[in-house]
Structure formats: structure tokens, C-alpha cells
Amino acid sequence: MKRWIAVALCSLLWGTSAFAVQTCNTTSITASTPTADFIDNGNGTVTHSKTGLMWKRCSEGLSGAGCATGTAIKYTWQGALQAAQTLNAAGGFAGFTDWRVPNQKELNSIIERRCYTPAINATVFPIFSNGAYWSASPLITNVFIGAHAVDFMDGRAFSDLKTISYYVLLVRGGH
Image 1: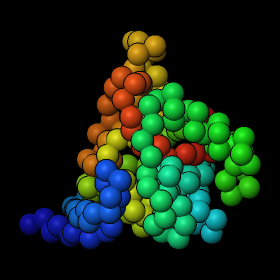
Image 2: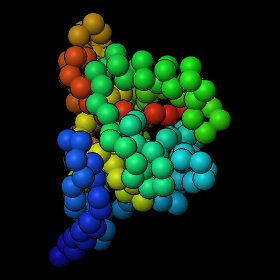
Image 3: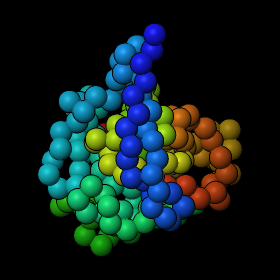
Image 4: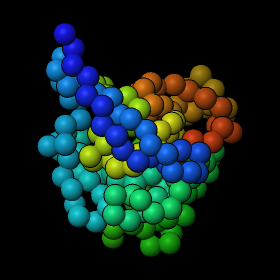
């Protein structure tokens, strides 16, 4: 019989504090992003040892210990790309000025396949905003209108109009 474990964590939804319950199947599904695969750099970033990518632990708009300060911001696709450029031009984050929106493959690499609400490692990425996050990857069939995203409520990858607003998690390294 499958044993489900629910872990309560505070999440920022629609600009207000709310409790979300992350549910994980820890008995029959192996973790796709175990905490041991991430190095906490002690500066608000983690490095994923499997990909070599450095991630900001907080969604854009959140900061501080445990990402508990601020409100996660939603951006259009172009706004998400601009947010990374603005951050870098203002001096960057954690001593780096090459932050960017991750491509679809990179964003998919941090989906925790055994969990949902959110489908991400909640220890590595605390107070994660449940919902969709933009990737930098435009939709190949129509690069002018659509782009790819991931819904971290359930880990589903999808595409949408670039004019829709979603959250952003920045990355550096790779390509």
C-alpha cells in the first residue's frame, strides 16, 4: 500500500500568505531532486550537482531567510526576461551578474516527480509559490506568440501565450 506523507509549508498565493500542503509519495517513487543533490551556497543560492546549474532559492519578489520576505511577482514572458536583465544591471545577486530565466529543460530538471502542491523540493526551494513558472524557451511553432512554462502545482510542462503572467525562478550557468 502506498503511504503518502503530507508536509505543511507556508506558501505565498495570490499575494497573501496561505498554507499549502505538499504531498509526496515517499515509498514507491524515488526522489527526482533529493536534497543531497543540491549544495546550499549560503548566499540565497543552491547548486544542483547533477546539472551544475546555480539557482536562486527564492522566486522573484521573495527574499531573506527561507524566502519569507516580500511577495512573489508574476511577469509576462518578456517581463520575466527583462527582470533578469534588470537584476543583473543593478549589480546582480550573490555576487553574480549573469542570472537568466531557465530554458525548458533546465526548469524541468528541478521538478520533484514524487510530490505535488508544489512539485519541487520544498527544502531546497522554501515557500515556493504554487503555480506556473516561465522558461526562456519560446514555442517553436510560433516564437512570436507562445513560450514554455512549468506548473509546479503538479509538475506539468505546457506552453502558453507570452502575454500571460507567471512566476520566475532565475538560474545561472549551463545553457
